[in-house]
Length: 207
Ligand code: GRF
Image (cartoon, rainbow, N blue to C red):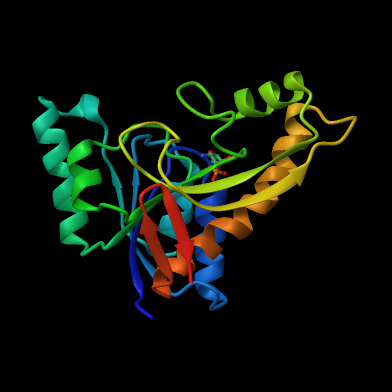
């Protein structure tokens, strides 16, 4: 087993980030969060990180004179904190290809639906749950997947179903899905800590 030296990227309230921290605390996830990175200085996740004494860094492309400087800043923060794995926990920006290459098959994202349905550009937050209800699906779920250069398209590591109920609205469905997100993300990260993951093209096999 290796201890994951994690960078968590989060743009919002950070409940998945909190769930990761709880899993580390209760021993279910063998990892250290080395740094919390956000594009959003208002992100709730930044407050949580500070409460835990975890270093934080706001990195926003628009604060840099060029794309190269932005990417260099991100890579150097990851290097400085000796990060060997990245968890995207509600991160609303694309990860630069240079970072994806450096952390090939070492970046996980969580998505609040069963990919490859209901993913891609614009499919985030309440839009996902609205689309599921409009389509009349009886089942939704959670997907944890490896990150490549396309939104929500990398190989799937773990999925779990969540029922859609007759009287659901986007908020009630989101809340039920979120509970499962909080379990599945740490479980999927732990597969990597336990070195149980084999990637065969688009298929991820957990041994
Ligand atoms: C989650 O629904 C996650 O699946 C999606 O963004 C949301 C983030 O929620 N990628 P939180 O900030 O972790 O509470």
